[in-house]
Amino acid sequence: MDLSQFGQIDRWFPDNGQLGLGPGTPQPDFNSELTKIGRKLQSANTDDFTWCILSAAWLFQDCLDESHTISQSIHSSTGSYLHGIMHRREGDFSNAKYWFRKAGPMDFFPELERQIRTDNGISSETRGKLGANFSPFEMVDAVSACLLDETAGKTNCLERISFLELTVLTQFCIDRTEHFKKKSP
Image 1 (cartoon, rainbow, N blue to C red):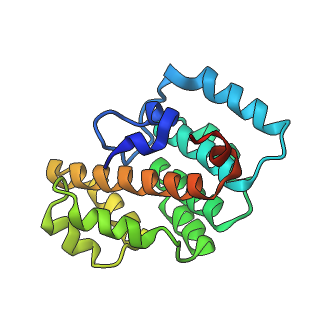
Image 2: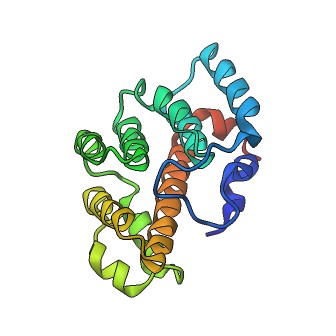
């Protein structure tokens, strides 16, 4: 995936193209920057998609509490989906499924499925277990099973899918927010 499409925010993404399955260790590199952005957004008339981008940025930095604070206040399917990712990462799998049910099918799934299908870093075995159509519920089950039986190959594939899921979701939000459209060249 070419992350240059994200412009300035690609700095927030993990360099290795993977996103941890569990809570991870919060990365302090961008905390002050993201906090400052959050303060600016509070005083502006900000759409939900912009808030979703900030929530996703916190997830990329393994700062689950900060992401949770934002995502639980976004009353849209995209906010609910981010809320589900956060709970999946913290290991609260039933709560993650609740938020994924609340979100419903997402418009970015076809792009995510395409990227999963064509990504060389994802084994055919993992693709087969998750099926042709992406399901956040199957992803929760796969992550739960993987964390119980840490098999390096499966972990790497699921971390790659987790990364793709969040980057595709972020791009979906960028494409729909006025905040980033105004800043694009």
